[in-house]
Image (cartoon, rainbow, N blue to C red; front, side, top):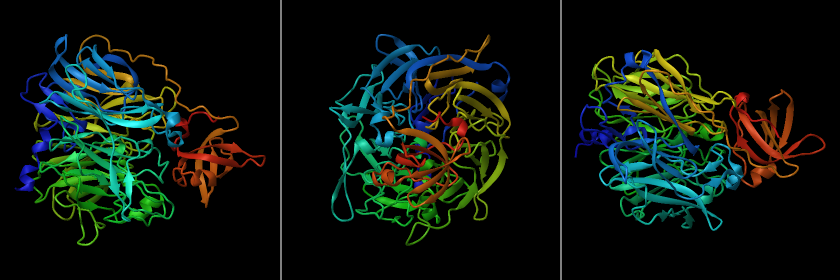
Length: 626
C-alpha cells in the first residue's frame, strides 16, 4: 500500500459534505477530521466579504449548565426522538451533561446527565487549571454511520473517582450498550505491573474514532501526584466498548530520582490524530524535572509519537534535541497537538506539524518521525518560531494548489506556505495583528472556504480572557493576508486559571463558540445582534482550612526547596516548599513565571507550602489572595 496516496482518506472522516448545498456539512470530531486540520472546505455563505460586511452577528446565546471544554459537534438532518428532523449541535459540559440543540435556534431538543462530576476539592492538589467541576473534558466523537456519540465522563462512585466511556444514541442520548469503566494495566521495565489510576489522571485530549476503535489519551492534574500519574493511550472497540488488549503506557520506568514520572498526553485538548493506514499520532509532555529521564523506549517524554493502531508498538518518535531543558523548565512539547497534513505535491513523504510551550513549530516527516538511526533526537525538516503554543495548528489548500499551515502560537495567526525542499520547506506569507488574548500563549483556529477558490478562505480563532472581570472571550476572523475581518464578544471564561481551549466550529453558514455555561451561535442576519447573557460564575475556588492562605505571585528564585516569590504588590516572600514536594503536591516552579501557593505563614513571614500550582503570568488573571 502506498502510504502517501492513502494518507488523505481521513480528511473527510469527521467532516462529511455530500453536496455544496446548505445544511450539508457535519462536524463529528475535534478539529473537523482525523488529520486534525480544522478545515471546512464546503463553506459557501461565510465569505470574507460577508463576514466583514455588517450582517454577520450573534444570532443566539444558549445557556448551559457548566463550563464547556469540549468542542461542539454538528450533525445536520438528524432525527430526534419525538421531535422530528433537525440540524443538531451536540455540546458536552463539565457537569457531565450532553445537550442536543437545534443548530439554528439553539432550542434544547434533548439533554442527559452522566453522573455527578468530580469537584475541584477532590483533585490532586485541588488542581486549578480546570473548571470547578471536572466531568466531560475531552471532546466526544460521533460515528455518523451507526448514530453513536462516544464520550468519557468523570464521576465519583462509592467514594472512588472513576472514568466511564459511554456510547450514546444520537437520536435519544441514551446508552446503546452498558457503559464501561476505564481500566488498564501496563508492565514497567522491572517487570512490575502498573495500574491505571483514575484519581491521578485527567482525560483532556479529544477522543479519536479510527480503525473501528475509539481512542483516548490521559494526562495529570497540574503535575500533582507525579509519583502516581503517567500517560496512557487506551482504546475500545466501537459499538461494544470492549477494551483493546493493547495499550500504550508512555513512562515505563520503575524508578526515577525524584519519584516524578508523568510523560502524559494533554495537548491542550487537541485530538489524537490518525493516518489512513491507522497509525495514531500524539505529543507527550514533561517527565522528571532533573532532565535526565528521557528514554526512547521506556520513557518517551517531550516527543511526537507514531503508534500502531492496536496500541502495541511505538513505530517512531521525534524528540527535540533540547528535551532535557524542556523537562527542567517545564516547557512541555506536549502543550500543543500534532496536525497531519494531506499529501503535498512538493514532498515525497507525508508531513506533520507540532508545537509546544517553547514556541517552536516543527515540520516533521510523518511516515517516520525518527530523524536518527539510533535515537529520535535531532533536527526536524523545519523549525520556525510561532510563539508559545497551548494550541493546535490548522491547515488548508489555497487556490495556487499549495498547502497552508495556520499557526496560532503567542497572540498572532501566522500563515505558512508548504513549498517543500530541504532549505526552507515552510515560507511565511502573513502575520495577523495581535488578538486580545491572555492566559497561556496561543489559541485554537479553524478555516472555512469554498473549496480552493481564490479569496474565499476565512481563518477563525477565539481569544482567551485577559482579566478576571469580565473575563471575556472574543471571536476573530481573518483573511488570507492576515487582515482582521471581525472581532466580537462570544462569551466569558471566569475560571481564568484554566485555559479557554475553545475551537470555533464553522459549518453551513454558522459559527458555534462554546464557553462558560454558554453556546454562542453566529451567522448572517438582519436586525440587532443577540446580546450575551450575564451569567454569574459559580464559586470555583476551594475552601481553605483554618490557618491556610492562598497567595499568587511570580517566581524570582529557586534554591532547593526554597522558592523566592514576588507578590502582586511587589513585596518579596519566602516559600518553604519542602512539604509540598515531599507530598507530590507541587508543580515544578519556574523562574519568571506565575505561581499559586497554599500554606501557613509563620511569625517570620515564611510561607510553609502544602501545595504549589502554576498560575498565569499576568496578575490581572489572578483571583484575590486569601
